[in-house]
Length: 488
Image 1: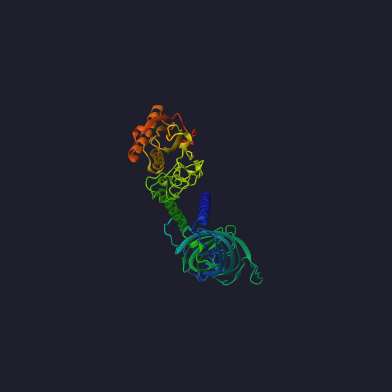
Image 2 (image 1 turned 90 degrees about the vertical axis):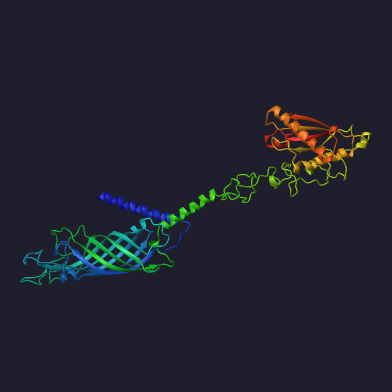
């Protein structure tokens, strides 16, 4: 039995402490009042040797005309566990009728006492789960503790020829030699209480406690009686005032408010992880670009991919393969300051005169220097165009302007013929890459013939497949998916 009670007590303490820790960590933590002072008053009932009935309620004036009162100071550790320092002052009384010449019968006593106890209160109502989020209006609790009682007893004959005689009692020696010093004994209080919240500052409650004196038997002035040890019950009404500047007292807070709030926060986080408003595959809680267009590739943070790092996302980038560090316009196309058709980062002659013919490096082609008006003796090449993976489709934004440069050169000199060479990266089979290179070269020629009216006989189509890569790095395979134009 003792082990069971000890286990229950330890469980309550652990649970109560955990509630206090949970409340301290809660995001919605409020500041509370922890201290209270109060007054109490009520009735006492003695249980000991000089009592008429073991369990019945005695009605003699010596038994019932007894009361007590006092004050207390409370400290609430958390929503469940509290501590109370209590002072109680009062009287006890009792009588027992019987043979007039026996010491333990036909007597009555009156005891004045003062007890001091330190108690622990456990608000078991706050251990019961409730999904209510409001503070409680009432609570019930158990109380237990330890303390001391100091007392003095007067004992008299009740009836018979010696009625009213003073009998020896603790700590009085006799009627003529009265010693009023107090006797002190250990007491163990235990009981049950209920408390109502009148307002944010005031409480009203009822409480019953039983004081046990395990090592003493002197409260009625009769030692070594049949009952073994004395004790007394105290039923009282109390009034408490909360101390502090806050509007909430710790004991009135539903400790499951914090749990409910944490569950709500967790649910909100789960919902946030599941939501993806723009449908890019990255949840809104992590998405740094919440309005990505549909079907646009994004990185792990939800931002639209920008392969060349020029600040223009691929789906808006006219040239998604701009050289690193190159300056681009708002469409992602690399700047061409002299408008010769060669981007500044590749132009070795950045100030070419307007209308001049240039090669793929932006260098002016001087036909007169060859001694002939024909370009057949001139060797050079024009800007390359690039393709997506496994594709032979001409891309408007990245290829049309470069094909226009080829057309301009060929229209300027009808004697120029061009070899169109298609290439592929190394990711496919060799035969497939050779075929893909040829298809890319053919697509470029078809475009020049259809759009600019050039004679198809001026072109020679060839494929180098994967045999002539510009880049040997896997990080720049895109430059190997191209078509080159070589002057003949």
